[in-house]
Structures are given as C-alpha cells and as structure tokens.
Length: 488
Image (cartoon, rainbow, N blue to C red; front, side, top):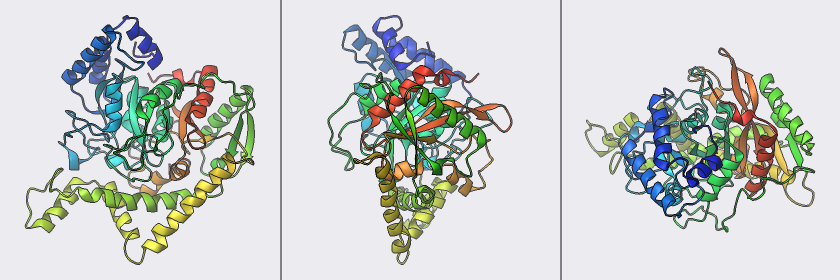
C-alpha cells in the first residue's frame, strides 16, 4: 500500500478497501522504524484524530481527491499543535497559534498530517547538514546527503515514509533534493503558493511546492495548495486551475531548449549521460531538441548570494529572544540579551548569511552589490524570456541537469561553503527569474563509495506553465520507469 501513487491511494480509500486510519497507521509505523532522521516531530494521537475525521468524510460521501491521503510538512510551514522549528535551535520548542495557508489548504482538502520534516536551518543549505537536529540521510545510500534544504521532504517520499510532502524552493531546494533522492518535485511560478505562515528566508525568492512520487501526484497537490491569499502581499490573483488537465497530451512537436551553459565544465560525466539519455527519450516521444543559450547562467550564483542573504538578514532580525524563540539564560542588559540569544540560537551557516546580507546592505556597499545584483537579476529573467516567450521564442520548455553531480557523501563539503553554493548553479537562475521548474528522476550516476545514486532531469517553463511541465513530465514517466525505482 505504501508504494501506491496518490491517485491509487485515493481510489483505495474511496472504494473502502482501506480506511484513512489504517493508512495513517501504516505510514506512522514505517516512520517509527526509520533511521533517516527525516522527521522532527511526529504525534500519533494528532495524526490518528485527523485520520478519523477523514474517515467520517469518506463515510458521508463528502470526500475530495485528497481526503484521507497522508502528507508530511516541511518544518518551515507553521502548524497549530505541532512544533515548528525551521531546523533551528532558535525555535526549538515553538508551537504556532495558527496554521500556514498551505497547511490550511491541505487540512481543508482532508489530508492527514504525518508530522514535520527536517530541513536545513531556516532553509539555508544544499545538503540538509545545517539542521540543528542533525543531517537527514539519503535513503538510496545512508552515507550520502539527501540534498537541501527540503532534504527531509525528499528523503521521506523516496523511502515511502510519506506518499507526499510539502517543500520550499528559494534557490533550488525542491528540485535539488528531489533529484538527489530520485523523486518528483515542482517549484511553481513565484506567487502561486501563499507564503503566509512559511517562515521567511528570502521573501522575493521563497516559494512553496510539492514533492511526490509522480508528476500526476504533484499536479493533484498543486491543485490544493495554489490560490490567491490576501494575507500574503506577494500572492498572485489568478483563477484556480486544474494542473492535471493536460497530462495526456501528446508531445509531438514539442520544442525542448537545451542550454549550452548547462553542459559545460563542472558537469559530471555520469550526470550528463543520464540527462542526455532522457533527452533522447523525449525525441522518441515526438519532441525536437533546440540548442539555446542562457548567457547569464554563471552570474546567478553571485547574484543569488547577494540578494538572498540581504533579505535573510532583514527577515531574521525578528528573532531577538524577546517575544518568542531562544533566549540566553545569562545576560547583562537588553543589547547583551540580543547578542547572546542570536549567537546561541543560530547555526554557522545562518550567521554567515546574516553577516553577508548585512554587509551588502550597509552604507557604501548597497549600490555596489545589492543594486547591481538586482539589475543582473532582471537580465537573467530576460534571457529566459528570449528563449520561452514572444513570437520569436526558441522553445516551449527548457531541459537540463538539476545538479552538477549526484549526491555527495555526508561531511564532504561541510568545511567548504562555496562548494555547497556551486551545487545550485543550474537551479538558481530559474528562482531568480520566478519561473516554474521541476525535477523528475531520469537515471543513476555512480556514487563515490557505495554504488548508484539518483540523477534528476530539470524541466523549466514560462510563467504559469505548470500544466505543460506536468504534461511533459507525465509523458516521460509513462514511457520510463525511473520514478518507480525504490531504494532497498
């Protein structure tokens, strides 16, 4: 039962072949037996109470497509009754008095919460090694990282500890862990999913999205979690849509842009081979490959690591030990309490980004760094528009690798922050442009020590083109079985 897709699980629930309570219990037992450190908070009583409510809806024929479906939430979405830590000591015992909009939406759809998932502290990282509560292990190889910051989400879905999970993507944190764990994840257009109740890292970049087994599953989840929210100033006013409406359309005539910048030096040979194999499969499905250029790709790393830390330094100023969060036990005065509480409550990577952000926003450096980064950000977005939009557009979607390598070993890059940053080279530009992007499993590369590790194919579309991306991914998954492969 734990191997079924969301659509299959929904059919089982609707036909009364299994109850929501039995299904939740099955996954809770799997979580309890796991040693991946993917979950930070599990409460069996809370979960089973939600499952019983879902069973009542099913019995009363009031169920929707997600009623009774177990789901786990990244610990960046605040939740009533469940702890929300953002992977940080700063919020070690915090319990929110309200639910994030995304959580509200899934509760309204009748899903059953399995618990809260481990993540890099305040979503800052590419390996899930920055969590105060310890790293998550990759279920394909427990000596490897699962990717970050949504590593707990990707690992939980890959290990079948949850059939689906919420996640967030600031610079690639849905796509990269989905790639490294061999599951499917999509970051929708910026503003499509409410950020209300999502603990902020970089407000102009953060975007919620789902991780699941298949593209069809992700479409069902997006149907529930998108929509306008007046409580979020960045939320887009657009009519609701069915993201699964185009899944079965043919790919005949689809033009796939292949950026030369995604296949240069730094891309591992095993990753390139898997991605090239996937592109060849798309040609068999009727698509045409078009060589394109995204010339500002290499600038996405310096631009991102100016803008994101700048916004983080502002967003994290609220964690001062006064109203909530960690407060130092011993201090002399208010200023001393601020300093000690933040020094004790934040980890090294968070401190590093706060310092960088404060520096680039400081007097004399704002114009030289932050303003310049925003200008280049606009040029990066224009590169994508030249390829994807207008009467002279070159392609319908863009494809390439998600990560330059397969998952690396735990501890390999903890002493080299720049090496971690470089792992996001192929995902950052999409986030800076606010475009939708997704990762689907497309093969395996050779791990450093213990055999094969998953490789993901990245699919990028124009604004609000999620339905097309899901169609493209679904057709690939109908023709291949990479998404069905499971870790031992």
